[in-house]
Length: 227
Image (cartoon, rainbow, N blue to C red):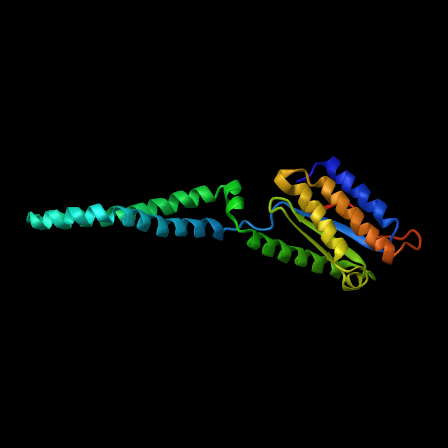
């Protein structure tokens, strides 16, 4: 996801911040939290159900005129065959559209662009809370941890902190930190600088309310964790 040099820069930033606080900062990186397999199906079904009726509605006027002429000319049998053929074409068109759109939206870049932002936010938040719960369960005697969770392809950020930290620091530093990463990821830019800025913001908040009392072991490595 990130190069070794980029991970080294983040590691150095976390290490420097943790020297000034009893708290811990853990950066977790995910390429993409979900494959969003329902998105290609949803788009394929929507297009296959919506487009043929629209085309039919546009063409219904000329078809009705043709049908009237054929009935007046006593060509009802031919009209029935034509209508049967039209229904068959309609069904084939729906199937072809469904398969074509399904194949196109299965392309990762297309699927990511067509996935609603609200769904991405929900999935990333769920993944971040799962990671936070797992990390909290492994922490020993610490209630001052901050998780910076970054979903790179989803371009979503979640920053979670223990309840005690929220009570002391409020929401402002975490919102600023998340904004720094989101800004860095905008338009596909390298997120590393934003992650480092977020680490520094979180580190400053921790140092203010939970200053260091001297060297101590940490429960987690300062190196970013990839999941």
